[in-house]
Image (cartoon, rainbow, N blue to C red; front, top):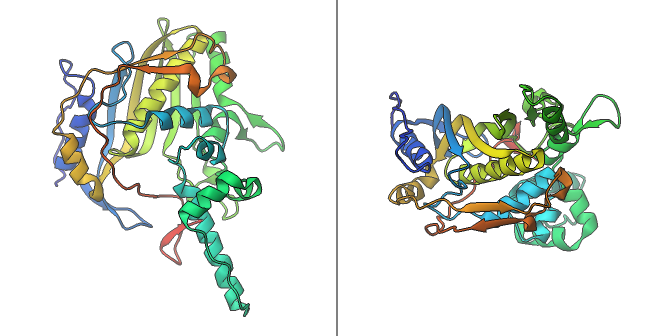
Length: 346
């Protein structure tokens, strides 16, 4: 892999999915080698790319591998309803967020155990396995309340942005829809999840978010009666995360368009650091052998007329015919770095 200049990827005669596939290929061929701090996993990276999906063509749920549609639906509802506790997802048998609260639980439990040992206590409480932890989230409400919450992530920042005024929050998602109704030509319709007060070493240890905000802001715009949405994603796991992000934000675009009484326009995906982890390369090479199939269609029930109307069961996916799923291990990267241990702190 080298650091050569890349060639343009988008050929308008191609299936739209080739934008994604060509980006995979470009990372393999020209991505620079980096090492993820805290996990020491090698990745190959590009910086500053963009793909665009005209939603009148079809719904961009990738076909060269099966994308976890149930997870897309329930995660987006979790965000849009302002939730931050994984119990909702666990109860729906969606486990895409299990790793982060478990990492926090394990880190804090190990510290407690070490503290107890240093004070000479005879018995140190055993730490739950990940499977035991998730089962306890599902069955024990008090445990879920203590350990299942991931504050200051997307749902909270979209719907309940914390302000300096005690007790006051801002519903950014509701605001952008109202602002667009009041001013159809508005250029300020941005929802932001990146708050420096709570992120990385900009935050105090007490306030620091233990989850790294990756898709950090998006903007909507009324373009001649069509609502388009542009996402800026500062860090992008191209093989595992990005197919999910494409589907999630394309669906968000369609939902917001319907609520606003507009047609669906484009979903525009703008990347900062876009990368492939080294342990995903065999799966990427397998995916690149596959030829895209027609995109499916998505229908949203007409009863969805405001934000609180949206529920996962009101969305129908039609005509999805993907290749088989390609599994790979999630890299639980990012968060609050502890220089003493060389790991991400919980």
